[in-house]
Length: 466
Image 1: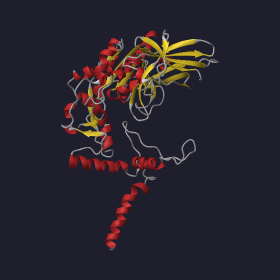
Image 2: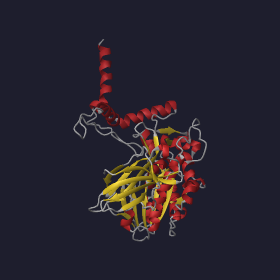
Image 3: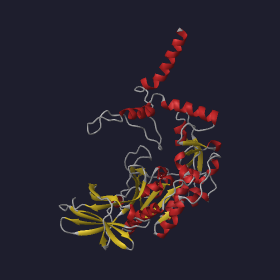
Image 4: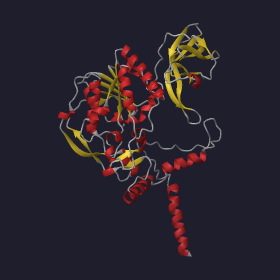
């Protein structure tokens, strides 16, 4: 009996250890593709009781229990060695040691293909940005960083089959070019190169891939003095820890080979930087010419040394929504927008931070609809936003907002077209937003929402109580 009691106590102690020892051995640890839960709060900001406290506490424990990295590593190694699979649904174990981020499979299997209206929204919003920069003499270039599965599907598990149809990037490519937007085609560049240009255990391109991506973008931007990394000697060294490997076995990551170029450079950060994943930083190189502003994500982090080497000044920003006016602070020559393939839809989900463009249209008639319209103030703008009544909406519906100010002036603006979700999680492709620059002493007094409908411009919503 004492023996059984001893084992029971030992088992209970082992089970309790991750919780009891959490204050001393917080297992909080994450990678670029994950985000840790925050500590639970008994009261909300309004001072009311947080009814989700228990679920928040459970989520916090899952992300912070003691020895979490060690236990995750042990479980992942056991699962991989015994069953040949991944211990987390975020990572896919492929052939020959290749790992894939599961969030990219929807693109590969064509289960997240853009709707016609989402394509319309993206092209419309990017065209506004492109025309805004073009009017100021700034070159604008956009590119999509390919998912690893799009370039190296041969290492995926046999049971993951490719979907039919073309990718979102291929859908957008001809439409971007038709709209006069400079597009740097990473898919073509990488597919024409026989080298392995992505890490086996990471989501992103390796140093050689980053060099090719840099060349593709710089050439698209019209830069002539580009460093030719095909002519620069390099050594292969075990210097990189893959983000997917860190998710699976954080305490047993084996560094992966990467190219280290033998190149002397004179660029530097203008302010202290923790690493190239920081949200916002600037580089300067007194021996180089040109000024660049790059809106980028995690793929763009690997591009920093290449652009910093060849440009006199570069601003790198991961901040969203994109502050389209920020490049004007630095007398920028070129703006690049780099977006991962798996996140293309986000271009239709969030309006850029910039003043809306005026339009010269008037409503031919007014009808009553379920179109919604709200107004608020944000970041120096009056923001008018809402959803168009779907009964009066088609894939090519144009949306405008006519406003009247307290000084009796009237003006009409072209809206940004957005995709979102309703309270039940259903996708809405008929949202809109307008950013109107605030003027001192002048208030917004009246709003009309106007759409193109059956060959006419129709006012579908009026608001005079603002």
